[in-house]
Length: 122
Image 1 (tube, rainbow, N blue to C red):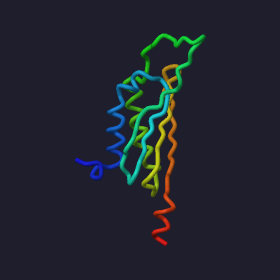
Image 2 (cartoon, rainbow, N blue to C red):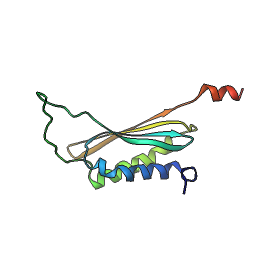
Image 3 (cartoon, one colour):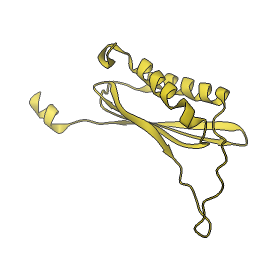
Image 4 (tube, helix red, strand yellow):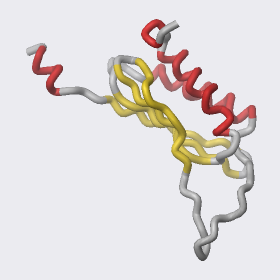
């Protein structure tokens, strides 16, 4: 099945399933998706910076989203698509953080338009 036959919700679901392992190792960051013609092209996870002290990075501690937090985050991302209206090009950013074992998340939509394509319709 090609992307043009797949709903945006199904594509978001595939994105989250693809990055599930990565999310199990980070406790904060941003999941981003780039959309063109209602198809996801580029996607990924932008981690918050690792901070060093005196030029030394802290020891790696594996603690990221739990299975329940991942499922809640994925479901929130899918539900957020109900708020996307009439645009086909842009980006969606899913910011998340886990503090004291509680997942907090927010969503930012960015719609993109092209003046050249608008001029063709005039």
